[in-house]
Length: 79
Image (cartoon, rainbow, N blue to C red; front, side):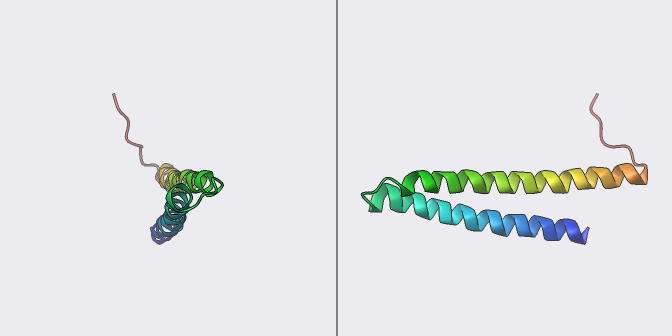
């Protein structure tokens, strides 16, 4: 359980940092700068942060499902 918590914390902090930098880059490029190079870089950083967060959560969820399968517990099934 501790490794899952560490993984989620790492994903949360890395994703949040990249998201904040992406939003800041987008806002500087859109409002503060005449150059249009920073705007797509900010958008790309925001999308990248979302992907990092989703992939990290997927890894933790799949690891938990594998642990339950190895213990012989039936995963939750819908009708």
